[in-house]
Image 1 (tube, rainbow, N blue to C red):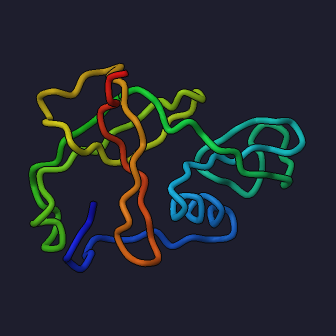
Image 2 (spheres, rainbow, N blue to C red):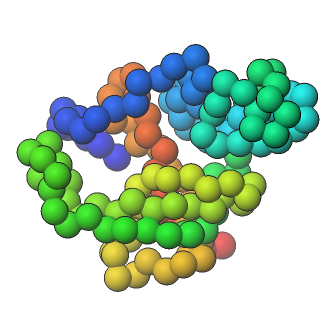
Length: 141
């Protein structure tokens, strides 16, 4: 998706807790963190389970499907690095797994966005090291 230009926006700085998530994105897989003790699935990755406080965790592949829960479209550049990307839409997606994830919505006009609109994950290889998960309207079956 990002082609031919240097990526100028802030990039994630993976740490020990979310490293598996970002490695999954690099492979174009959306991974969620799952507690190995109680089975609670969570997003965003954390060092301890919020349910049982275990530090034992594993990664599970998500479907990549969900629905729009909320969104906002930004039309004002909040600094010079953002001047070439406005307008852009930040969306909260309710994943099929029941969790909510914040990302960008692409390939959709702001006036066409609706609550409960089906969306699917796509991966944007923004640098050789970083791939960002984004969402677009789901293709009709």
